Length: 432
Image (cartoon, rainbow, N blue to C red):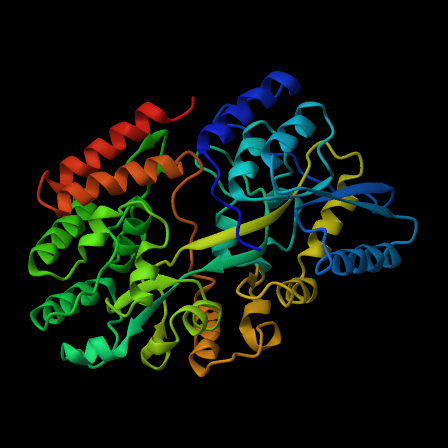
């Protein structure tokens, strides 16, 4: 099971335009969702998940549905599960034909498509408990140019920093750096001792985090434009170029720019001092694939506003029993039910603030002591974590940007030129 957030923005925008044509809605930036109102909780509703009908999760969902129906006699909830492949096409088909389920599992990218076409309830208007949910998760369902909030955060992921203490000590660094700027300073010191620290180059998404760690803000997309080519971002890239000359950055970081998990793979080899990964990295990866470095691995919180990976629950604005649909969405995502769900999904975290106060209530018993530390750290940062990128910023754009930034790190083009080229590429390739 993994967070399913890598959806091309072109699909999202095309979906919104197609829905507009089919439903008579509008894709205008002023679009806002409907309110669920205060109607009676009664009647029949449908609830759709994404590739979660299996031996592990089926009993859970059947139990939630049964409990809700018992609490509201006369109500019937029909659970539907769609396969992993083609989910975005199915959502488009359902919405375009007026058959979108009343309650539906949507990542932010899909929710953006439907919200753009007026297909989702604005939970800011409809729900009185939106403040109970993790701020970053709620924010992931607020979209530039659209008024409202369109999803309850359901199950979440984030990233932590991981350090090789033996390599840090070799370079005279006695404790893991607490900020990204301090990490780059430590990388200078480590390079003098022949230790490499960095095995990846930053893209616009990670630059967002790095700038936030310095007290600033970097938007990828705002007011209809890609805007990540800022002086602050260029300054960080220039610093990477200086570190590359010192030997602090691995050659693979430039050769594999845009390649998934390149930094983790190098860290597992014991050749670099720092990487980022998910909260279950120690038990699920290091202990299995790199046991020799396990004793020297230490976890720490992510920098600035760490990344947030989100799956959520939205309510159809076309539901004939909107009050029931809203009530079920709130019931499914309440603290008790979220804790029960993520207990079945190790490495993920619940979407309510209260649920994250005690990670021992839902995390697996750690096989390694540092894994327990990592789980606690991830829970502690959940409320400040933020979704990186933007619905219109695709993985192809991220990959192209990292390739240009790699050229800047090698000194072949300037940092500002790399960012400007990446912005122009995004502008030319965005669906509109």
